[in-house]
Image: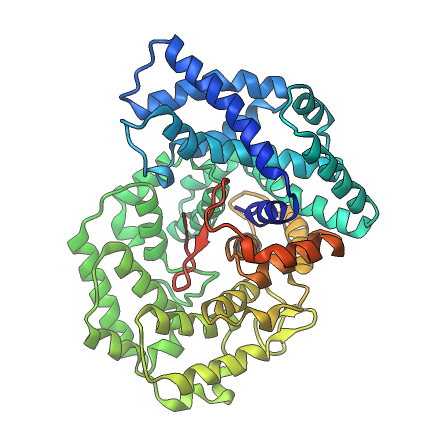
Amino acid sequence: MIFQGLFNIFSLYLDHIDSFYDRLDQFFVERINSFIKGNNVNIDNLENLLTDVLDFITPDLLELGFEQEDIENRFLDLFSEGNSEDNNNSLIHEIYDLRFAPIIYEIFLEKVADYLVDINVNPIMLNLKSKNFLHLEFIVELRNLKDLINKNPEKKENLKKYIQIQERFVKKLIENKEQIENLEDLEDPKEKLQILYLIHRIITFFHLEKRFDFSHVREYILNNMSEWLITIPLVTLRNPDLYYCGIYLGKHLNLTFDKEKIRKFLMDLYEEGLDEFEAPLVQATDGVYYLLKTTEYMKLWLTNSQINKLIETDLKYFDPSYLKNLETSQLVVILKIYNLIHIHNVEENIIAILEEADLRIKPEGIKQFRDGFVSSEATYYVLFCNYMRNTLDKVEDHKILASIISRIYRNLELLEFSEDMNFDLISELFYALEILKLYNCIETRQMIIQLTKFLFPSEVGEKVSSNIARIKTKARFRHLKVNKITGDTYY
């Protein structure tokens, strides 16, 4: 998902890129059709059909220069529910268009990006030329773009580091597969579920769920509900509530819960929050957020009256003297909650929060407190807030990408997967990836131009800017969007 913005830039800058897609289509559609017609393939079982077709085209990809492990990782998405719009009765061209083609475009476009910054792709590019995948005009365009990039070593380095982020993350995860799976056996449920919650979200970010065995944590969640269906002190976005982690992981591991038991727990938690806090919305913001998110997951809706009791807040809590003590991410979560429940008549509160959040935006980055440290978490929430409110121009001139990418490389180098792993470090990496998701999947003019300015010479930025009005709402590669209320991605 962190290549979507780069592919959009290619689409806006390279005039002959469609010829590349067309030649890929011609080759692979012919190969797949010949396979289907020449073999006794069961087309009634979609998963078996996809597996058979993938096994058939894998030698073609290997011959072109792709690596087996990379093919396996990238085509895991063939079997994801995200592509469920087709069905077992799909015609072969529909299976290709909906399942294979978007992934094929992406893996080839990634090699084009590698070529532009000299990342060990000469054999693949030569093979693409020899097999007539590259139209002459497209070859000329790529050479000209490569020459332009070579004249701008700073941009070339930016692009190279950006391209290699996914490879570095995936390599780190796969190399530490055993250690990650062993984290499921930690005795402390707090450490077990909170760490695995964040790691699972990073794994799913790169669509690697099928490479990991989560059977132990599945069994734990199913058989030990009394241990994790609890709330913990000092809940924050870096320290998520235990019950939320359990329910989130359970839902994503396709577990079925005792709905009535969870409903009773959530209602008890709701009553405790009202008793403990005068203003839960600001005194226990993250706890309220996790409660509302969990009711959404479980489809156990609070009534309007119950919600109003949670969010009714005296104006004194929106005074600058109080708001200055809240984390930047907490300020934005209050706004997210307002949006989530469609609250009205709180404009004064919103203005006060926005004014306070703006004080955290500094030239060196976005801080978690007025005089605090620059944080990936704070940066993500401020970016999302401006996306939610259609004000992304407010952060257009800040060098967020340079800061975030530098922090990713530093933190990834420090990260170790063990029972003593640094929880803040994995949290920072998670939010850094979420920031890159925003830059790639929010396809506004501001985000595309910011990404282009960081990765490419000014000449590229000028052409992309002039063509931005014709960005496709449905690209030929996979095209994700970000929900303006929840922040979730969807096709």
